[in-house]
Image (tube, rainbow, N blue to C red; front, side, top):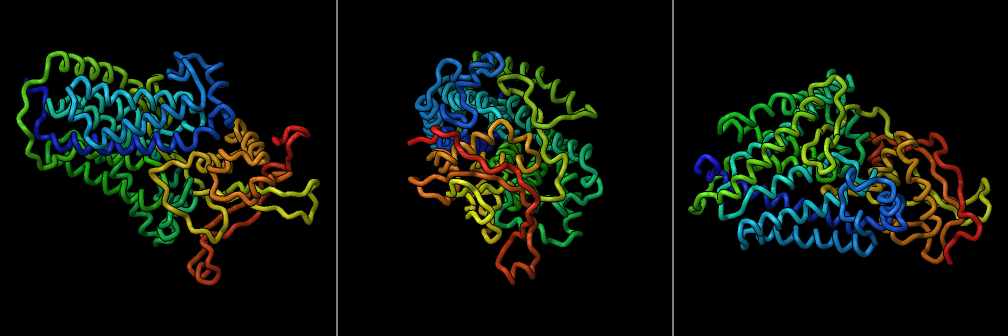
Length: 473
């Protein structure tokens, strides 16, 4: 069955699988280190409460069968172990059927996490990792050549990621059509990186060039993915360069990195593959059946992309097999940040000392320079950005966050960079205030050493304390 396999893409498959395994490792590590405060038994949005009201058919997950923090931690760390084994090449040491099962394990475990993760996992890159991970199950190992149809489906995913993002921009904020969005985006993006200040201060004509180049990469280049080589490789290389530019300009979890990983198998890498026999009949049948299913399910994202009411980052099935993507259909012109503060005073007064909590990634102290965290995902920091856009985004979980800070909950404090209160002396009251942040100018940076300038806007959450008798001893 020479038509079934593409031996010339041997190295392409290898680099894709290594990249996918590395991203699985990051995703499971993020889940293992953050879940207790977010969705654990005493989390802000507990999994047991979620599975009690949402049926398993709408959110297939192991945690519908059983949930405990210990069990969740076991699943997350097991995912880390399997991802690390795949990164080390364990799939090449076992028969084809076992390699497929090995790749199926992290997909099933991460699906279980995403489907109970609620708003903490409502990001497009979660579905993108699952969609790419599902295709990774059927790419095979060293026993067979990479299946042509699966390689095509990987390009189809990449096409939808880029083209969907391009369409949502052109249909959304007019600044994309005027080529002015990047005058604001580097300053107002969810989590700036260490170079974002410099990107923001690039000359405006260069911002216009950046935006125009983005439109070309997302609206024209994706069609070239299906062209003969070397055109397809050149298209993929251009997408990789664009994504690495975005990596330098901000922190977008693993969104940019998984897009890079999806582009890698498009490139015709030089390779000297070992001789392989024909693919087993059962494998051919399984791959073709799965491919037919995924192509049939693709009608939903295609219809969405063609719709004037296009939505972004939507899953059309509970298994996240085929999804639609997109980002930054609108760009904020002003950056607001929610600043959390606590006081030890039993009764807050005008002269009370309010101490500020410091987050790891989101802006706080104007003199603290942003750090690089991506591809690691700081979920609370990201949701705090949404909270600043509108209190409605935070209504399900913000009260729970305040309550846990009042308790000095150690799992919650581990999500922060620093708490201003010692472990044995929690605050008596917590409040939240809204500030407007802007990047300083070159002169202000030299004079003050601050990369941000902030101005008080209004109260976001009034001073609150635990109900009497509620404080943990």
